[in-house]
Image 1 (cartoon, one colour):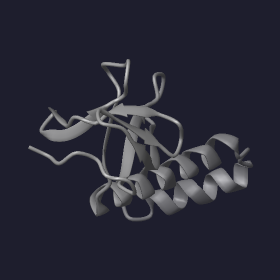
Image 2 (cartoon, helix red, strand yellow; image 1 turned 30 degrees about the vertical axis):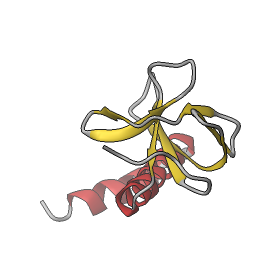
Image 3 (cartoon, rainbow, N blue to C red; image 1 turned 180 degrees about the vertical axis):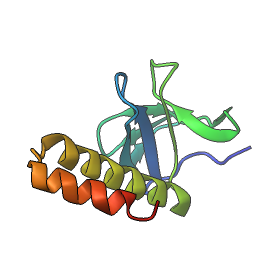
Length: 114
């Protein structure tokens, strides 16, 4: 069983975008504790009782049975960095209006190894 939260613990929340395949990560820290709850820097109140969800111990949001916060690990930080990079690239391609010459350059670059 996992330990109870302590002031200063770093936690994350992973939110899946409903109509896309994007994943958003929210990182925060524990600021205050009561006997049964933890208040995070972003104002969220958690139940300070770790439960296992999908193989990992997490902490449920008080009054919400679906959303959970988990301890931050180096793997999660790297996962979030890669996801942010993927979203930036996708946003750039969505916002960019390519000329025919640019399209040809991209096409030739991507197909030169074939």
